[in-house]
Image 1 (cartoon, rainbow, N blue to C red):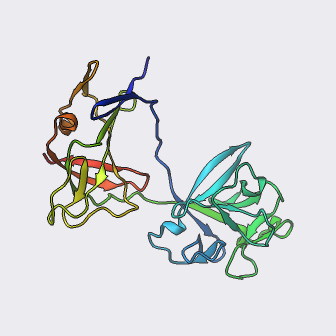
Image 2 (cartoon, helix red, strand yellow):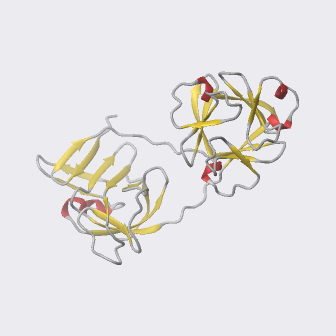
Image 3 (spheres, one colour):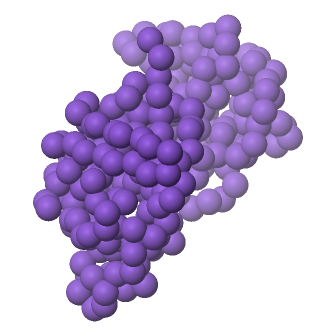
Length: 276
């Protein structure tokens, strides 16, 4: 089956490749002996430990497969990976680790959902036997029954996100990207100078009612499971329509629209409800 993906800006039509995104599962890393979790909340340059981490993103991690049973461990908050490249005796952090063996880990099952975590490069195990406030590394000791070298991955429950009203004025450089394969509508926009309560939007802008978007908030709207888009592309124009995403018809024609959205923390304001 042939996949067609279109990006449309005012007066311009570009063909783009379709990108398929998969949802990430986050987990906490808990020590069996002390019940403490790995985190980097205080940005000390190494993994820290705490019993209570609440909803901290600094204590949430993902696994990236690196082959042959090994994986990289990436922090949700900073995007940094755990590694031991400089052999400092504790877990280090880095955003760029390439194919370093020092940033690749393997699980060795122990019992009751717990396992040891060994490094591909040094064959050392993570442990906290010395209670130094950070994770240590050892080749031989943990091969015994040390609970200090046994860990559990606790999956983070996905809470229902809070959504807010985003108001937009179509036109300007606002663009429409639709993937027929993933059934995903994407709208790129510029941030309004103020909240819509305090001022008027310019063409191509969106904003919250009570304030402008912060610098780190996505300037992209994403609506999933839209399977009824009709696009008519001519030499110098296009027309689009959808009952599930009716606002897309305004991208070229102009006009205002409002959406209930939430920030997915992956670069999208995800549409939960179309208001008008």
